[in-house]
Image 1 (cartoon, rainbow, N blue to C red):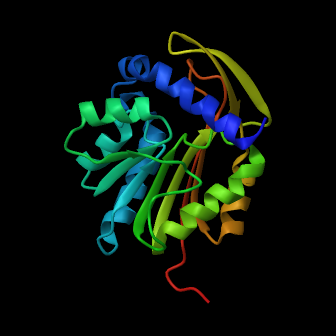
Image 2 (tube, rainbow, N blue to C red; image 1 turned 60 degrees about the vertical axis):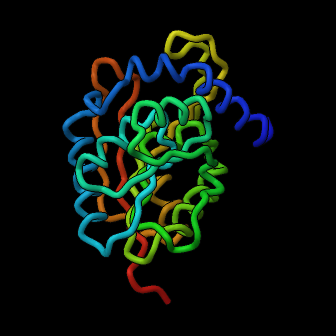
Image 3 (cartoon, helix red, strand yellow; image 1 turned 180 degrees about the vertical axis):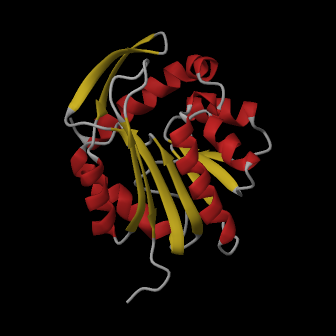
Length: 218
């Protein structure tokens, strides 16, 4: 599958499920306490450094964007799916959202204080991870932070049903070591890592990595 076909599949799937997704996941109450701990650590970092905007990269319908905004983060959201962005704009008119691809973020070099990528890489083939993480690095100012959440494992599985709709989508699993290695390769320093067991309604363990672009660079 070419990159264009894959992106079209992801885009069309989330366009189709946007309303159902928003109904099933209306807010951040789904997140486990340990997940929230990592999110709160990210928030402390990005709000204690010189004021710079933060992006929710792969924001979906904006449920996590709203959470971070409520915690004092100057945040906006981007997502590949115009359908998801339409729901986000309707439900959170006070926040800014736009359609964009993770591999081509609409920001200048060193513009942002944080990149929040909450399960945003799960439809990314392993070979494309370095390019996306390099893009995260590019848009972060020195001293900026990135937080990534993802499902732990190897390989991928095909999704044929999601949020009450028939779909055709690949979900990829990564080990924390693989993602940490790609973050380091992009120039980041990984400063915290959390892996937890799957809860009753989850099929795999989950991981969250917190990384920092060095404040001083050679």
